[in-house]
Amino acid sequence: MHLRDVPAVILGNGPSLLSNDLELISGLFSIGINRSFRACESTVLLYQDSVLINQCGEELQGRPEIIMALEGTTGAEKQDYVFSVEFQEHEWKLSKDPLKYYPHGVPLLSATLGVMMARTLGCSPVILLGMDCCYEKGNTNFYGKNKHHNKQTLVGCVQGLIDIKKYHGEHIISCSGNTIFTREKLEDVIAGLSPVRKAQQEWRALLREQVNPEGGLTRPN
Image (cartoon, rainbow, N blue to C red; front, top):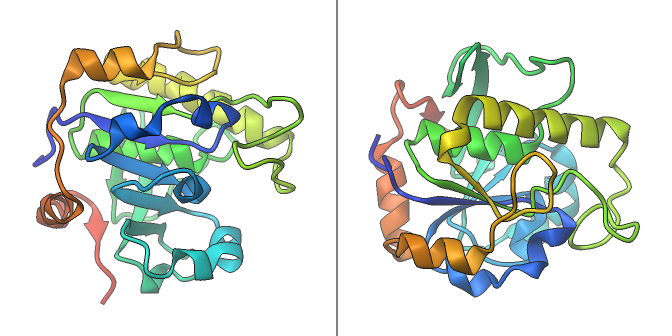
């Protein structure tokens, strides 16, 4: 695990994302989820929803993020990396095995997959931003209302956080507005960590080293 004990920031799309000073995470290893790129640049941009690429494909062209897509998602073959997911009791991992996708009968949201990815890579602590699992003033996300949200969206989000806390709680710091973790201030967290910052090409090189069957990340042919 070349990123063992490297702090990782997960950029969810919840309303609280923009309440943080996102300049504080510049140069840190970060995994942006879906439309987080509209708020700030991240090291990786992860998506598993074909709607995203259908709606935002032009916006994503030429962006600096390493784009990772779930296997079988629209446009996945055009991205930097493709991944599949396996859920095992007491363990999360990314794998090349057949997809085992609904461990609780509810969808695993992209932000939960981002945490799984960070932990698979050995990252610690994992800092949660914009992983709220609640709405604010009628807005589902930091960018407004997402018409594709439904009751199962919040159920899946909350269940994901419960599992994150159960299996990886000691590695998690939440700066989000959810009720599963105690919220901490991002500025205090960053000050306490004094994390190393790297240029995008340096993170890209480190991630490339992780691409192997054991790590479970595959590159398109």
